[in-house]
Image 1 (cartoon, rainbow, N blue to C red):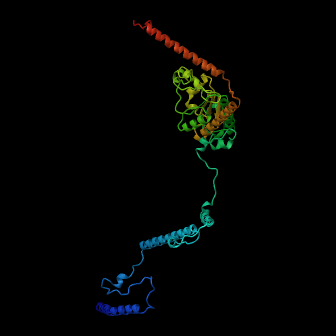
Image 2: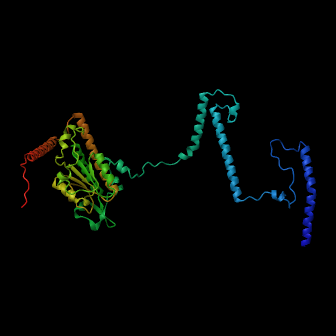
Image 3: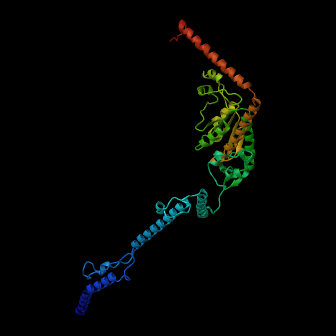
Amino acid sequence: MIIRQFCARHGRTTIAKSWRPKSACYATTISGNERSLQPPAGEYQGQTTFPGHPDEASSMLDTTGLPPTPRTRAVLESLQSSQSSISATQREVGAYVSAATGGVTADPTALVQAPPAKSSRRTNRKALQAIKKQKGAASAPNRVGSHLTQTYNPSDILERPPTPEALTLPDLLAHQTHLGHHTSLWHPGNSSYIFGIRDGIHIISLDQTFAYLQRAAKVIRNVAYRGGLILFIGTRDNFAPIVTRAAQRAKGYHIFDRWVPGTLTNGQQLLRDCAVKVVDVNDKQIPSYDDLISKGKHSVIRPDLLVCLNPLENPVCLHECGLNTVPTIGIIDTDANPAWVTYPIPANDDSLRSVSLIAGVLSQAARQGQENRLAEAEATQKATYSTGPVRDWLARTQELVEIDVSESVGRQEEDQSGTRKQPTSD
């Protein structure tokens, strides 16, 4: 069986090898002599000779293509996509050139041979409008959908807080002003502000919060209208941007680090190096008082109103305000004593959103008071407040400066005459 197959295979190979040269010559002769059998010009012409014996290097088995693999398919697809993209680019370039030349030609290579045509502005404009219209139609599906106008942005409450007139109960609810502390931490003085209990937590009445916040806004608006100094203080973490934005909006002052004990009771020693300026009714500085104030002997200037955002951490500050008759506004949670401040606002003092809302509303009210004061002062050139306390303060400052000058002159005379008493030791 093995010998028979070997003979058959060897004989078939021998016969095929003997007929191969004749067949090649016959095909070559026909294709070379007959014009009708010749391929057209420009068309790919295949091989005119047959490969040799299967055992030879140029065998027909070697020239036969291999079956496609996933890798070859990927390469073929990439080549086809590249060819299609090149064709699309050529068509776009041709359309653009045709529009630029007034529809003369769409082939970029023909521009070199074609004579310059007279293109009109109207034709170019129409072509550009058609291209723009086509691009707009292609991008129309991208614009399909809904647009959300009411979205939450954490920085909106800092940049654009609501005014007291625009404040609503849903705003207070959305900013978590109604959430109190655990029932075991409550202060009995807040019983009138508590609406109920939910999961062991006191719920603050939003009606009470709204009413007390409107009252505090009215107070701070009138203080700003009368030209008073407003001080914002909040010493908890992340309170710095809230306090600074509120003070800038109200044209006041702020403290966000810590309250130094004795700032009001011993301010003559702690605040003697602070800068002081004198302004007119339009808030413009008067330079004639710079020499008087630069002596460093001016009396302490206390704030006319203090807004405390976390009263529990600043009892010393509130105590000093009480000793110096400085009115205070504070956010009172269910665990704080409402008697610590003059104008309490029952609300949540642990949430940044709640504190931002309350501080923003108060600063907006102060801004309204400042704007009303400046508008009236510009129209009438008169102050909206009594200037008597300012004159008294300047008179006291002048007396302190004169006393200091007289004491320094006396010391110099004693030093020059040598009559100054020296301390004696026992």
